[in-house]
Length: 226
Image 1: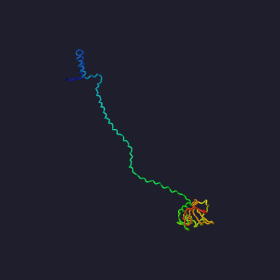
Image 2: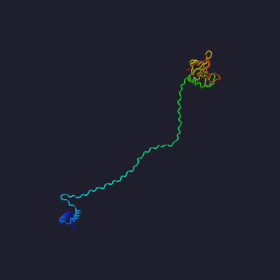
Image 3: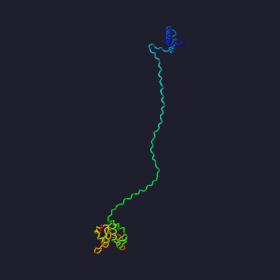
């Protein structure tokens, strides 16, 4: 059986239904057939309306599946380590004993008279000999002339001559380094020594003795060289 166009089928179905209604026969029987035909045939397009063809829905792309985010491993930040002190092996070091510097020698200003005494004391013990002028034997005036000569002062040779050459001072004014002149009757000087203070003098007394420190006795006069 040849296929009937869809609009012809619609007209045929309408005529059948009309005849059935007119005759009143087989409405119940024709209803299923009409429904079946209606379901199988396309619905007529009303006249005067534009034909709208069904448009296929646009293809919606499947949602992109996000790639699983893999967390990067957390690397702990390097902790700055404290510098470790390098301890050198202990060594035994012997330190030289600190030697305290020697203090500067104290400069002692000595008077001329003190220097005379210092020089005279160097000859303690030298034997007396009449007319000797040192350096190992002396008489009284030989000792005094030798000592003063060491200090740059020249005295005459004998005790009387020395008395005459110096300035005379009182006993109260006597000081270390002055000359002590012993004298006899008439004022003649016969012996000389060097005043050492506290009523004593350094001299070469007489034969059988040595240069020594002794007390001043008898009559005497004081003479000053400087």
